[in-house]
Image 1 (cartoon, one colour):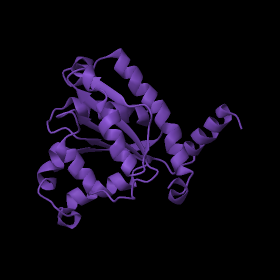
Image 2 (tube, helix red, strand yellow):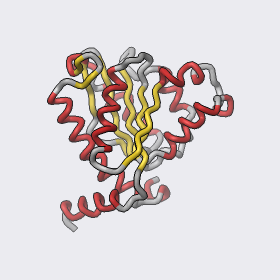
Image 3 (cartoon, one colour):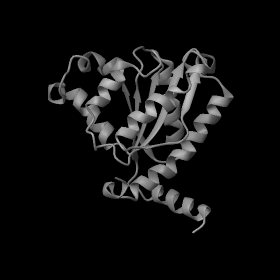
Length: 204
């Protein structure tokens, strides 16, 4: 089968999914308003424009105070447990963090420390980050991608990085960034279709 035909089969499987499918976007920012949150909102909106989907946004600014002091998952309050279940049951995860000390924020990592080790196996994950300048862009490859490789997730090869100059306040204001978001959204849908057509056991 040709690559073109294979892509057609995969995209078709997206359309055959029980609609709407679930996009869960996680912002690792510790501030509100936030450029990171604005970025992952824009990515989620771009994906939702291309397929019937429900978008749920999880912000650490909202759940962080209840999350930070927990040492075990069974010690989390119900509203945080609900966010973890949403992450584990998503059809597509969009995750982003500001670059902080050359990595993602500590609370972002703390949140994913509570996610079941095998609950993201084969799950499509679109990676994003924001930073003060282009020199921080490799955080996606050096920090985020290895984290989700541990979970055996299917990370999208195209990550989305944005620097301060890509925003007008807290709104995406860069044609290059908008093009990158569009490309990531286009590439995400075949991956969602592939994951939906395979059992978890086949992906391990």
